Length: 408
Image 1: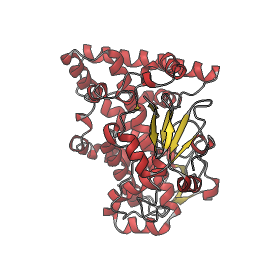
Image 2: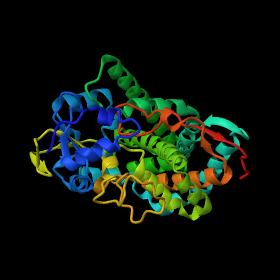
Image 3: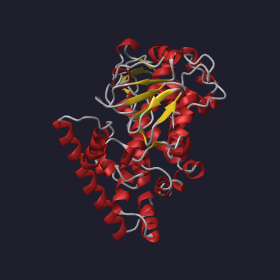
């Protein structure tokens, strides 16, 4: 039977949300949840219902199908996020996805492997020969941020801005405080000014990078606005580093808690591809998909969902559904098949998945090869998980101890 779920399950999930989710799943696949506060909202916690929901056109990404207060707040406070493919339904989604789709195909991404390897080795070279460090600040966050900055063609020196904008704008816009509204509006205006200047620079002096190609495509087809280009670029900056950083952090934490799997991956580095898929399933960097809005009255798994409701699809819960995964609470880097939904499903499947997978494969293979004595520097119970309203799942820090750093 469906019953209300406490908001903290998705806003402050802690180290083990899976036990409570398993109990909810046994009762019903869909439960009401008060998030955003005071709203009609529902949480999906099984794999089968999540697949159906991802494919259901009645569950919209278009913010015009959201409650008026939510739409007005999102547009007023963070307009730079309102004109990209993530907030659109077909055919508008199809038109906007064309801006990025071809650039992120697996074959073009594979050509980045040597450069990603070089950045990975450069970061590890900067580690001390032995001792302790926070793997998130020294490695997991800089790696994907460097890669996405280079790929897009923006200055890595401005990374502090990108990280601040990402932290502010990636929060789910619920009923904000005045301070949160001011912070979001400030970030919005800074993003707009910064990226509008970048677009002007590319038009004045074309360059061979993603933003240069984006400007050429938009100007040639005469169907895209600068607001859409700005929105697409900031979306890629945020999505292109934060989730991959958490993939590296969460995956490393999971490996270090499972010495048998760590030893297996060290012994058989060819398993790194399937290991990355298992990290994405077991403790993925995304807790739930971006919110959907019920465009009309509908029913999911026998639960009535009124028009205008918020619907949250928990990809973490789907990844631990025993109806889809044998022994889902066990980390198994050889797991096959592994039909997780860490990158979503259907029309909104993550365009950047090939890049995230590639970065994860290079990062884990290189860390284990060059740091044979890597271990946690604190008891696992002391690790703190980020508690906010964003869809991300990650650690606040990951203190590790290492010795015998090997050359590249």
